[in-house]
Length: 440
Image 1 (cartoon, rainbow, N blue to C red):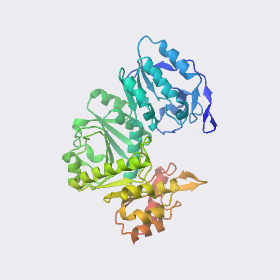
Image 2: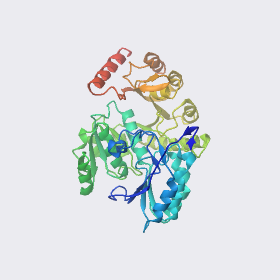
Image 3: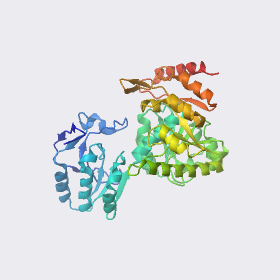
Image 4: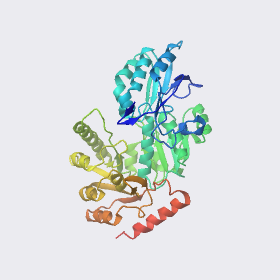
């Protein structure tokens, strides 16, 4: 059993279906994992804790005879269960595409009239939409892709601010699914985190997790202290008066579904002039179809932005975004004339591209540039040291920006796992001195 020539280890299991002590987490009453271990390596994941005694957690193993055991467990249930999948291993890991164990497990869940809540970071879940729709006809179905949303939000926050997440003051508005995940991730990265909620029971849980609890209805007077604000509430929370309270360099990320919680008319009046976005790739569609849909999406954003005096820019990070390389720039930015780019050379370097060529061809569309170091050894990403101590030819890169007439911001982005604390502060000071010598 394996994938692309790799053998896959098996581990024994007596049962797969386990009753939860509480239904607090998304209402599920049972947990089931077909695989053991996970290859994502998420910093905030408590499944990696030693208390679970899983050796080699980064190696994915399959539980022997898993489907038979799971079927027998379901047959013994007196009433249908609401089953959580993905608590200890992503059920749509790279092996699943070939093995289809999760798909067959969903067929069993459907056959025994159970419900399911799936946590995954993989678009492979779309393969099983037919079975999930069948389950939803009789039982609840929750697809917890909020992990990717929360991680993507943190990535965008790091891209958009000159600060590190560590020691920054963060506010999460709302304590739903995305809010709960952010409330776990941000403190793990060293952020001083506050969370707002409406219900007092949620505020009690927030305080119990070590975050500061605030009432959403009483945020007035509290907003001026935060460096980063993550809104997850799909109703107007940050109106004009509250936006005026925020610091001039505060970064606000809108994560809620329409209509959202940020008053973008007020944001425009306060001279927040750039909206940065990406566009995810749908595997079931062709590249041409993805580009066509992306163009339609960006054209609508640009039309709305023009009404508010806000420019739209894509980021060249690969995180949930395929509009990040010369081919996409040519097809999409080449067609959409008022679509700009927030550019970070490190993303191109780690993807094996030519950042000087991209700057030569597209710097006239750059609205914002990040100064993040990159270091590749033996063809592998090693570290993101302070810009100026890395392998990027910053002199040549800035020479192209000067030649193309770039007059936007240069934002230092500390992103290293090694340069933290006092060493990290020294690294930032070094980068400032380094780039001052390149300023004309």
